Image (cartoon, rainbow, N blue to C red; front, side, top):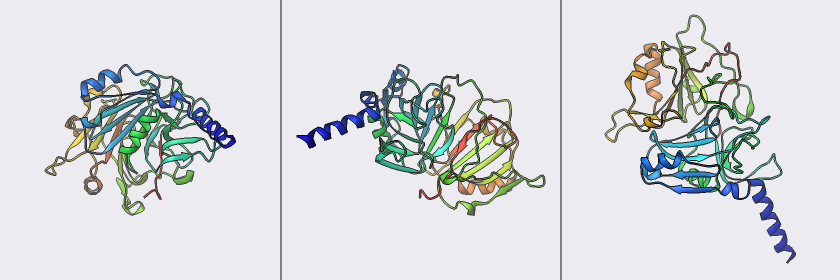
Length: 335
């Protein structure tokens, strides 16, 4: 009886640490784009909607909107799931930026917070930020992680792979209309500083693919700085000067998803404010005004593979732009 009581107490403690029923949440399945959109607009804290059959194949991208406390899952540029989340509370804010999934552990326990359970953990940074099942009170209350409903965390865990792109944007409690401060911070694997060396006056571009020879590719196009940065496996392998139209202030996320016959195709991810863009072929106007050195263009074409992500943003990437920068974390060693 004593052992049975201990087991019950341990189970109760685990539920409390996860947020008990709040972590379990309430979910719904959808079978069409219209049905998913209707349910997604009505989610309350702890609720989620899931419709993977809308886009059964293709690369996964997760977009976490801190302002709305919502995570949206896209496959092949099409929205297949939406869930409420709880991000970092004041003093433990969830970092914003472009991340890759470094590690997956369905039965993870925290080494930092009293062995607390973190079911279906998907690590975003080596210093402890992750997606995982956790408490969902309706406001930011984590120590920096992104809490998901338990079942949604399980479903998402089953669909993602190491290296999948996770974009975290916005600011808890503030409107998404506020501009981002930047998309790069000098942080690398295991928190070690990684300097981002600017181009010299004589350099039109720099290309160093040997620094990170394999892994997922993310391209960041900054209108404010007129720069293109290329990261593979979270490590910068190239940057270039560019001529980017500054008239469009919108954020665009694009995923490379070639057609069945191999012909190239970019699809738009319908990030918040552009949900109607889900799965649409790339509007050539977005990149028609993008100009880069011919050599850089040729090198970039060699590393783009299915699942590669392009983020077109007004946010700066150069170090002389001040403010709290968004982050691109290195993911070396996760492969």
